[in-house]
Image (tube, rainbow over the protein chains, first blue to last red):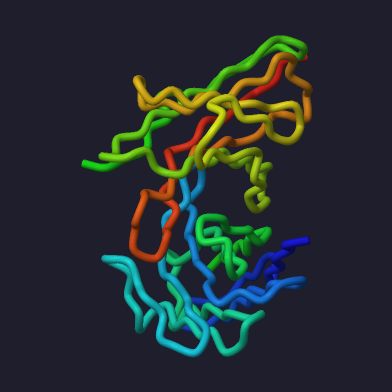
Length: 116
Length: 115
């Protein structure tokens, strides 16, 4: 149980285009999902907290117009990197928190984004 | 400042030898504590967690961790390492009463296993 998937697992795009990454909780409903960014050989940095039915809460320094988050259902959150540039290349990981488990998150396998 | 520190960036250990990864935290009250493992190009897998109670916590894959309040530490151990344990290990905390129950990660420790 508590499986989280991400799609795609990797994506290569041209500079200036937008890329959408999906995060799904497969066997539970998640009112809260989180989006992290991880640079090579570095730790995970929280980008935003995604709450179903409401606007995402972004961490300081994260551009909300650049990284659009939509949590349209209890099992799906999407991260759209708009007008991507090479510096947006990174590993993006989502996590989901089942209801009632306020302190645990289950992580997706990550999405490798490369912007040319 | 509140933080999670993993002092060792890299650790190399021989297969079959014991392993200990250090984690220290700096918070006013003991946070909820976690250890995750990340294989290359993969997401994170929870090894174990500590919320309260017995300070020696057993996890998956033969790992255990010991919470020491006096040292503000939550070190991860494994008695005998297997080659498949080569990965990146992250200590993480959720501070008590933190808004949104957000995880804060340490910098990670990369474990290399020699044959």
